[in-house]
Length: 379
Ligand code: PXP
Image 1 (cartoon, helix red, strand yellow):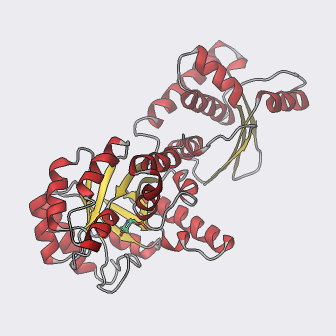
Image 2 (cartoon, helix red, strand yellow; image 1 turned 60 degrees about the vertical axis):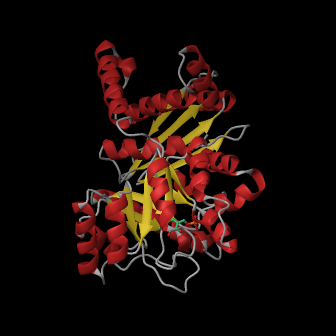
Image 3 (cartoon, helix red, strand yellow; image 1 turned 180 degrees about the vertical axis):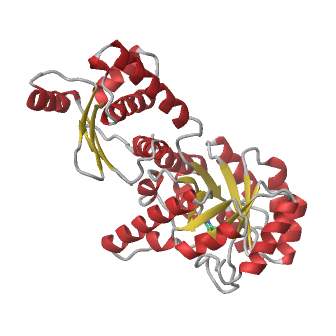
């Protein structure tokens, strides 16, 4: 599937939501293998297109151009200006109106045409209603969970009590994040047992505990009961989690760990590299979720390799999603490289730590979280 969205508009405009919506719609319609091009533009641009192709020199809200080529669905052009006017008149948000227009354009590409008469109009309206209903069954935008380990790193530098990651978690939630993540390491280099216990009491969104699949950690998790555990590999000498878990090689021990956590009522995610056989192995353990290690994408030395890593993540996220796994992503994501991934509809959650905590030194943690939320939610 390839949805490409081009924004040709005088002001900055985030297309994240439209891209996610379009990808999901193609999926709902079983058209994931088709290509769809979307242009989000101004009244003036859509007026020019109307004049050129239909001899009507005025702006309309949406135009569809079906394609005859196999593998291509067609093009949809939407006027952001018109959508905004209609949103204000209809008391809805611009985002909702754009999605309504996207659905209208898509149903046209599927061969329906309301202009052919009342029966056609009724059928088209019904199809649009069905698609809207199915699209909004789940929240359209990805969740953002903030890892507060590095607040604890600063505390541990002096071995005192400040700054407290538990206080940080409260502010992160107030800023609007969807969850809090901590990694309780075997060497307790940042997060301490006391932090996890207190966080369990105060976190009102969702608490994710990252941990190695050891007896000690499984014991702690089953007692504290985080909302979800993410199993990660752990080496004492590493600065941070350097690669995904080798689920394929450690099949038996990981499957056992997943079972023990499930027995305690805790859902499990597994942190893995974007590789097909690791994803298949993760699915076989019974885990409900994977987190794709985005480190190779984030650290790519040049644009070409970054593009390749991005495409691989897109493909593997789709593959995992088709296997019925929830797909999370994280590691090395920052204010420059997250936007592109945020538009990938198969990724339903981001786990981000270092860049947000670093930024908060300068702008405060609340602002740093809000800046990242704007990227992930596309507003
Ligand atoms: N996800 C997992 C599983 C991790 O181990 C880490 C690093 O602690 C992150 C996400 C967050 O990575 P970063 O701090 O680079 O944003």
